[in-house]
Length: 311
Image 1 (cartoon, rainbow, N blue to C red):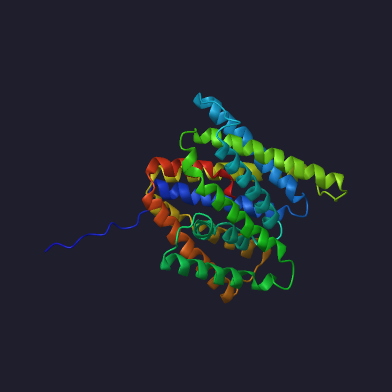
Image 2: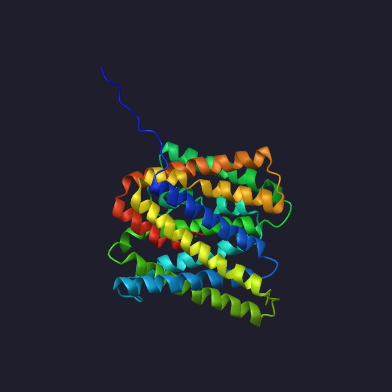
């Protein structure tokens, strides 16, 4: 009797694209954290949105597609949810260690389980319930060092992931819209919301950090460039490889973030913090893999392109 052979894990082109994308997104996060004392967090978010808007618009025009604005209504839900997520992301990134922020911002699969149960009335499985409980325990361990200080940033990071979950739940209704046009719409809404937030902060007399140093402005532009390029590589990875495998490789983003924390900010990772990362990422990865295995390749590619902001 012949035994079934298991295909060994190989770093193919899709895996390399995912690793490259994860590194660029972690770099964007590290740059945002590093610029927190030179630029207001809303300014960083605005630059990220503007660079994405320009890139997405050029991609739409280059492909011969048309920009969409008013319809369908689900498009606005997705863009508003994504814009809220983007704003929350950069608030958290400028106040939390990079690896903490990235981990908390990527627990949206756990939020999807909760939202599906509370709003869509879909009963979760026992495994899903255990996954949510594991994630909650991990969040407590990660944020335990911050509980005596400013806890708002951790809550904002979790709100960001919840907003991403809302956007993902409605993705199937946008299958008929060109993903590049969806991204352009989101980027336009995010740009307007970021600019509006900046205006009201200035009007209320909030001190706005802004450096005129050419080197620092270059690093600020690099936030938008690395974020956009990183998401493009993630899109290519999901389009070229098995979604379950690519999702697993994507975990390296947290590893890159940990390295940045240790090297650039001399962070000492405690055993409790590392255990928290594992408790959060293990169920999150499992839920992502299960969802990816059920999705069609074309839809996976569209979903990833639509989620350009997630960081």
